[in-house]
Image (cartoon, rainbow, N blue to C red; front, top):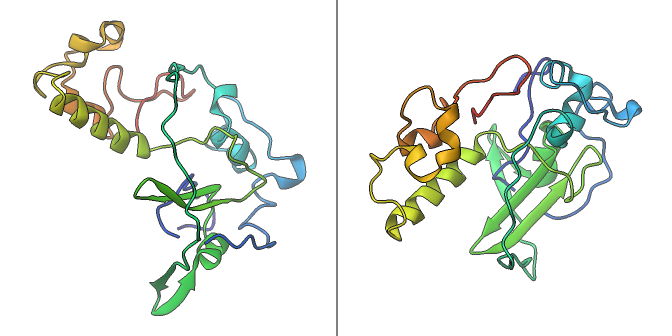
Length: 202
């Protein structure tokens, strides 16, 4: 973690549910006084003052592709009792509060066995914000492809993306095998220009 020029972990997989009234790391640098403004396609990733607003409001920065939600959402209940989670860092015991005090984390969600164990927010963010997922998208895509393969919805991992999603064919400079969707090089139209308009990395 770098003190200057560092990016965010929009979510992390570590760690309690006491709401401590302490300042989040570098909140003044990150635009708290300005209400965490949203950046433009050219500034959202480089200008620290707009990172919080941009990383939790990308639908206001670049064009988005909206997925239709299912008629019924899967239940995601909260655990009856919040666990007392601790971890070791630099040979010292630490808590979630210690972790959040050191990291530029806007949201922290820990799910185990279909239940929410931890849900915490910083930088005036709330659950209704749309957080940028970065590389978590690769893991979710890999799981989805695995389930589809097991259920017979995908015949082979050697198939290309456009076999099942014809709308992506026009964006693919070459045939894109399904496994490429879960790696950092991205899939159809992989890569990202300086405006963020064509990116699908992470």
